[in-house]
Image 1 (tube, rainbow, N blue to C red):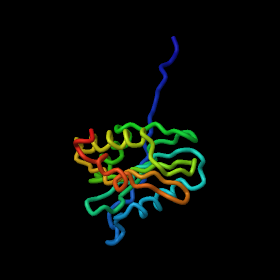
Image 2 (cartoon, one colour):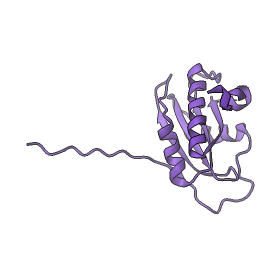
Image 3 (cartoon, rainbow, N blue to C red):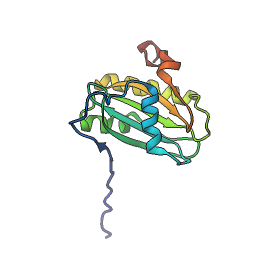
Image 4 (spheres, rainbow, N blue to C red):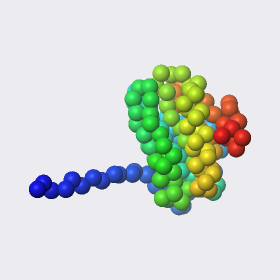
Length: 154
């Protein structure tokens, strides 16, 4: 008889903790995009990142939720909110890059955003924005497609 195989799943959240200075809140999409660019600079694969925020929208952590291929990244609300719940985040900003350089959100990007907004409402964690980031540009889905964040859009 062979020994059982043990499987372990690891979730990595970079926790920044308390003691943040006032004024470090993420208030605009360009601030969140700059944060994400620093995390994924130079990688030719799609990364899906969740910025975990406190009640004043200051980052208390971040999580690279998924690393995909050059054209796709799998994302599920369970993985996005797992880290947020763990650190007591009140809000999240999600972002992913398009290695192609085209920051326009795809139909799949909009669908994922709608699912995340719905899941966040159930958990009491607001999705403030969903960004598509490239090296030189970004698109805020909240700014470009605000209906994606409304209850009637789901």
